[in-house]
Image (cartoon, rainbow, N blue to C red):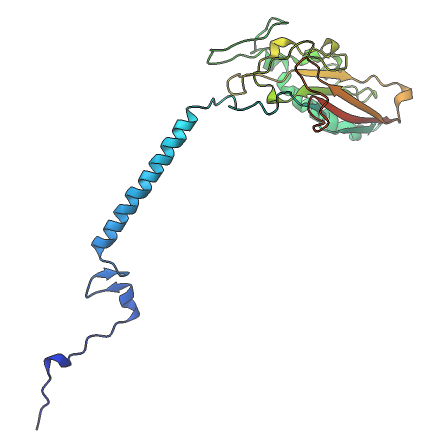
Length: 269
C-alpha cells in the first residue's frame, strides 16, 4: 500500500471568517487593532478632549468675571421704559351687571397686588420721598416700601371688585424693568390723576438694581379709577397713558408701547 507524503508547503491556512473581523485569535486584534493600539488611541482622545474642555471652561469663567449677575451688561438699546396695564388686556369690555364677565379682570389685579400687601412690604425700607435711593457699593441693596394701601380706592381693600361692579373700573399701570439704574428726570408722571396723587411715581423707587441684588423690590404702580357716568356706558372709550419726563420717549411711531400704552374700554349695563 502506498502512502502519499505531505509536503511542508501543502498545509492550508485556516480560512478567515467574519468573526475574525471582530476578534482575531491569532494576532490578538480586536476590530483590527491590538490592545496597546486601542490604549494609545484612548489616551490620545482623553488628553485631547480634556484639553478642549479645560480651555472652554477657562474661557467661560473669564467671561463670567466681567458680568454682573444682577444687572445686564448692555441695556442701552431701550433707554426709555415701556408701559403695561393690569388687567392684562388691551380691551376691557364687560357688563357691570354680570360678575362673570369682569371676574378675570379682578383676578389679574388681585394676583398682582398680593406682593404689595402691607404684611409683605413691612420688610422694606421707609424711604425719604423726593430723593433717589442710591445704594452704590452696597452688596445687598434694599427696596423702598410700596404698600397696596397707597392705591386708595384701587387697592381692592375696601372694594374687592376694584370698582368693576359699580361700572367705575380701576386699571393699574407700571413701567417694565428696563428701568435698571434708570433715573427719571423732571415730572415723571402719567397723564392721569388719582393714585398716587397726580399719577406721580416718586424718585425714591429709583434706581432699580436688579431683582437678585435688591431683595423685596416691587414695581411702583399708578392706578386710575375711571369714574364713568351713566352717559359713558355703552360707548367705546379709547384711553392712552404716557409716561412723561425730560429724558423719556413716548411718541415713537415705530414702537407704540415705548413710554405709552393704549387700551379700549366699554362698559355696558
